[in-house]
Image (cartoon, rainbow, N blue to C red; front, side, top):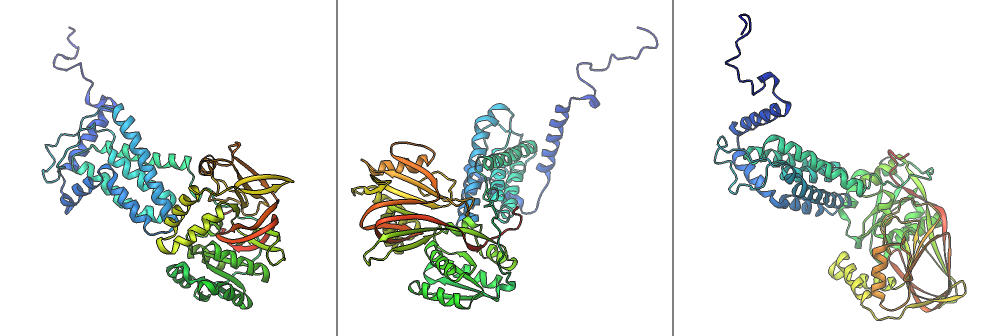
Length: 510
């Protein structure tokens, strides 16, 4: 060896110098030091709270309970947020357990530095990376927030606490939690890609029309159906629009009170279900008044498709004068018992066949068991019925059918009576027919599950500006917006394009 050569005999040349360690090794070292810092640090009150919180999140129990609590508020936005949160959690959990933990075999942290009071009574036996609890927490919170920012803000601290508890109890390294949280948030966005949120599918705010802007609601007379059970919504509207006049009417008096209100109102308002809104629309059309709709029934299809879900939405539109023109469906029957043509309007749907019987059964049971259970019971009764199909004429040919459904504008969800429209002024009827034949229940279920895009001998679908049906027998039942009447002879179903001015939120709509 040369005299001036450095002496390297004491160095371990099998390892890189500390400053030249691979990035992965430095990251693992930092992760371990961070875990030790959390494990040795005492947080007042956390020793009792965080382990219990961590256990409560096992198998998603905490998040299912949170979803039930959110949905129990019974607002549409809250229900959607709860469903989206659970769906995001399910996807995240499936992904972590089938791919994540099998891809990286990382051992759990050693518990030597974790105080016994913090440690979980039953230690997890799966691999450590990534954290399933953190993924589920992040997925649920992100899914909820994508549908409702307010509920997302309420859930976020709980989700963060669950994620922190996994490190605090010694169940995971910090990197396990961070990666799990990122994967959970990604699962929520993946669900949104598959099923867009309502905000992503906002109905087009067109055609815009001029409507009075009413600061404080001055000039608005709103009639509410006392049978709809909406005192909280009406109170919220009164708080938001203190100058508005609110009239509470018994169900039998709604029509008369709407006529009285129209005589003194600048804007006619209504709170109730789709049937009550239909009555208000007829009065508004007759008097040439704009209509303000506050949802107050079981389904509220028209209000929700407008983008009005609560008093805040309606109050903002009324004060700003934000309104659009919408189509109104119309049916005219040439024959009736009185000998005079019968005419009616619909904002949502018109149908004949088995659906009017479903509506009748639902209205019969609803006061006893509630709206949704009554709808299920009515559907079961109709599907099990032995009635004969309805006979009608289309273009001079006799046809047997179980159901004819005509929607006011195009629906964008599969099924016989789907629940969402993106455009309330497209000038079209969304017509769906289930042909007569054996096994009506099977035909109706098949049509409901496959939707209108699937053509078969059992069903047909078309989008038309008008439809004529002839040869209807005496006393043929028809349903429109949840109401039932009887017609006979010839029936014309058509549209009044952009006939009704309705307030709806337009902030941010292009």
